Amino acid sequence: MYGYKNQLLALLTNGDYYSNNPAWPADWVTLQVAMNAQQLHSDRHSVLISENIDMTRGLIIFAREPLPGMVKTRLAAALGDLAAAELYETMLQDVLKTARQLSDIETVVFWDCEEESLLRLADRYRCCSRHQRSGDLGARMQAAFEVMFANGCEHCCIIGSDAPDLPLSYIQEAYRMLEVRQTDVVFGPCIDGGYYLLGMRQVWPQLFTGMTWSCADVLEQSLAAARDSALTAALLPEWQDIDTLNDLSAFQERNRLNQAKGTI
Image 1: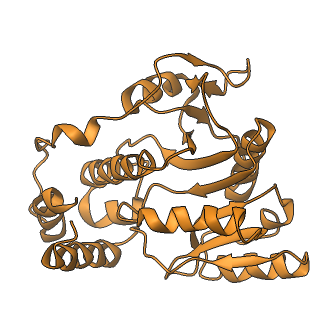
Image 2 (image 1 turned 180 degrees about the vertical axis):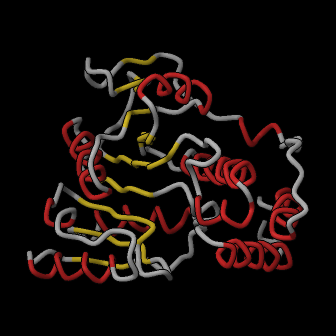
């Protein structure tokens, strides 16, 4: 699945990147979207929500408009703003492609972007889209969950857009934990101490307040908050997102091993 990116990633990490866009495969931008759409609410934050949706299971994807200088700043320090932005867009496309393989789950992308960009992004990526609310990461995630649950969602997960090879089975397992095991909250641990997925059966505000975001013990803080609130918590397998050159190298190695095994 990711083999066609090896050349770009090699160029990026070797410092020999040229700004000409490669010809990506057509299926990379072939995204499914319902043609009949309506707004979830009449406010300015909602765009392109299908009329025929099963909102009992929802998936939130947090994403940013892939503008040079605005995304993947740690990678940009080594690769340059343009290369980092283009790499981020490839990751976002892969995350969206994975999400569209989930059955009976309504995916909504919550964008960190300018208000006037929302309609353009929804059309460009052919995805149900909403604008992220203001505040720190916790406030923005809580607001997104509240929107989903207010619209009938019974089980909801959130992921980011920087783990392009996150196994589909991990996301599916999160819903199984919520639905079959009746777990209150599910975390997908990252090796850097954060989490790549959070799943809930209702909004638990205590998981979004009092946290020190973007630090090495966010998951530990979140698990402690769940314990203090007597919530049952479950953990998915650990995974690695892409924030640094080391993360990018690890992604390339996973890709190489998967190719060798014939799993891509």
